[in-house]
Length: 345
Image (cartoon, rainbow, N blue to C red; front, side):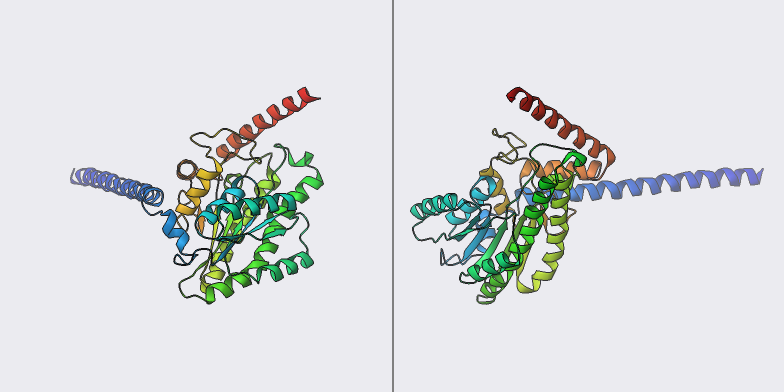
């Protein structure tokens, strides 16, 4: 009888202990999620400051003393990076493949900001070899450069299975998104190092455009998705290498933005204009935004950040269901694009 009572008491104690343990584990998990939500709120609503963050890379008392270089600067997000940097007292080296567009943009900026200097550099990012790299390095060494914006990029014309992607298309994507970005960055870093070393108040910045196409591996955009994933790891690794030179390296994650690349003209809650998006980038420099789990990475636009945060916390960016939803989303885009093309024939 006594043994039976002892067994009952022991089971009761074990149940209580198990319940308390489960409650404690649940409390820790809830606390962790709450901590992340608070971090997200702080990053998006409290820590950002457009003017202060940009001043780190420029001497606020001497406007148009230092230079930024923007690749793919004549359209979309690249054009907006250029305009906002110019408006904040940066000279801007304009790099793109079309000389006429570059000259037009340079003249327009000079009229609006007569104190600034807006030199042009013509480069076809599809064919950047060692000779072109050396020419660019020789060109930029004449300017006190503190900022590089790696904006130039190429995606698929429409979502396409890899098996049907032409070699010309996937080679072009790799050449422009990866090889050109690395070559340009390697050409420019020595100039940024030299400029930053000349002024103890300065820091340097290398900002590279990433994509949700890499954040969520994207079927039917396989090569583009892979190229942006490459840039993610490259940028994160390089940041640690360059901190000793006071150079910050950040990868910026973006969902859809109204642009020629996205082929979207109308903005919405989840799709900002280039002006809105770039402003969020400069407001949240060196803040994670929605990319709380990624080093030296930011998802700066508020709705993109919340989207990123929710998928990461609820499912995981590499989750099979997320991959399937992404596949169906791009499949619907492909079907509409093919129907539109068929009508035009």
